Amino acid sequence: MKILQLCNKPPFPPVDGGTLAMHRITEGLLAAGHEVKVLAVSTNKHPFRADAIDEEYRQKTRVESVYIDLKVKPVDAGVALLCGDSYNVKRYESRAMERRIAQLLEEESFDVVQVESIFLTPYVPVIRSRSDASIVLRAHNVEHQIWRQNALQLRPSMKRWYMKKLALALRMYELEHINDFDAVACISPLDADYFKNNGCRRPMAVVPFAVDLQDEVLETEIEKGSVYHLGAMDWIPNVDSVRWLLDEVWPRVAEKSPGAKLYLAGRSMPDELLQRCSTNVIVEGEVADAHEYMRGKQINIVPLLSGSGIRVKIVEAMSMGQCVVSTTVGANGIDYTDGENILIADTPDEMARQLKRCFDDPTLPRRIGQAGRRLVEQHYSNAVLTQRLVQLYERIIPPTMQ
Image (tube, rainbow, N blue to C red; front, side):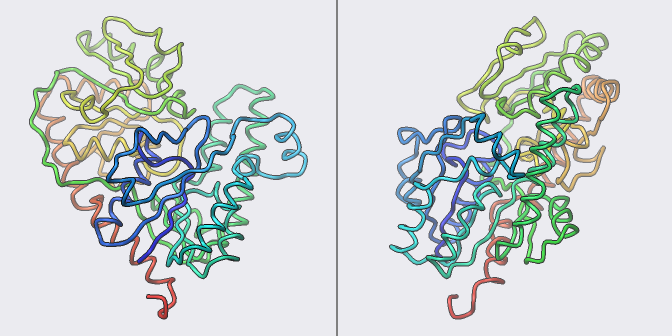
């Protein structure tokens, strides 16, 4: 099968949950013997870095990019607001991107065009006009839910009002255009249920974030009492969750477990958080090797207060046999069992209590981590999820093209 993968940001090098999700599917499709061509959007926030691309990946995917300026332009934002359009989507509209897609489809024939995120929906008409390929949306989130949740966490203000308007316009766009595609691959069952219950009539599959399980869990010395959060800090929900962790949760932890240490890392760490370093709070910003950073620490903490889709770092931590303590929101979309393969806590007191349980009984985080690894092996291996995606392709590709 020949697939054109349209990415809303460069999937390589994988630097956050979204890029990892795209990259793993590319890897899975290639490993299964399919041909994948990658065309990505390069932006000011997520630039295409040719010098950072692995040569083997470059050759296999023929990856390239088109730059789109996603900086907020007040006039364009105001016009979109007055017209009831989704400015979140309109920012991705680009004549250069449209021309490159048209050129590619005229030069080559594809069986499937996989569109990563609802934000690239404006390019569906040019795909339809230039190709007979089936078009699959990979919905990484129910995007408007994230914007609405972020708005509700703000104090009443013009910013909150505007963000609620953005969320409403994005919701209308998502529901209006979800049937523009031939099929939808959702990251989580909750997202799939949302789209089904709100009018999606297309074939659908749940294809979560996948991990490569070729490597065994490495036995490393664990720093007792070490807790870490790793996430891209240019994503508002991550920033809000870390603030909550520092302001509400960690003082309770420090009071009951004074020897505990909290490690914070992630791209674009705000200055206000970098300044929160102390004896027991280590803020490191971006790290060169995420897996190396994760190794040796006892507990992965995910204090997320808003969001949709699935948290990549939870699945990755589980794959490494680490114990995860998360809010219910953070663990949404993962087929977990609280107390068996993850520990759930939704208030500062609950989170502090769960962490203290782990510090007081080292067998608990070890047992939770081992069960988490088994969960990943059963439900989140790249080979299993790639096959699920390919089966979705086969449902929509005309028999004459297979």
